Length: 170
Ligand SMILES: [Zn+2]
Image 1 (cartoon, protein in one colour):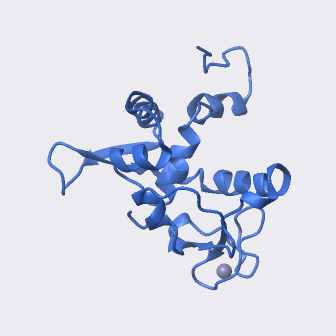
Image 2 (image 1 turned 60 degrees about the vertical axis):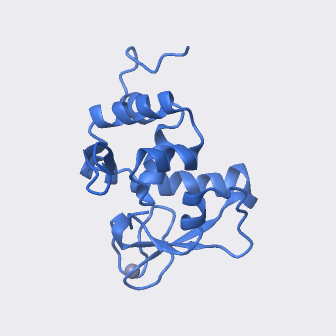
Image 3 (image 1 turned 30 degrees about the vertical axis):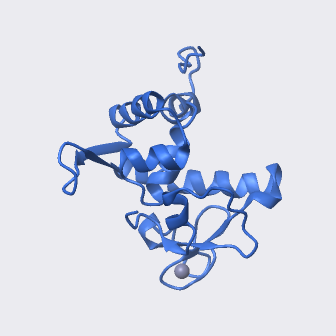
């Protein structure tokens, strides 16, 4: 198994990758930005083994990206939500999505992101060009693009299919 440490690299990118560079970690952050909060919802939407999901969630909690609180609707279960540290990854996730759309597979982009307060599409850096701010994720609307591909049919994918505000609980 590959390690996830870059101890010899004196670089803040290496430090960041130790937190979010493992397979699935950033996808979990992405799902959390879309309002996924329950273990079973991450599991069904990402289609990853329970043990891996459990490890990644623990790692993200330890790194201060996620926090775990009791689920008021399901005794003995938990909700996983982004901390301020985790929410600060929004522009990173957005930039990565834009980069992927431009350079990896232009056909895969399913969503556009707009500022909820004015309806303007965010720029490459997740900023609103009209208002001159970088809206926090709760002020961002993810709009489904016309002709978006949607191969997944699980419960969470069905919920996320519609236009929605980021962080709105699934
Ligand atoms: Zn705006």
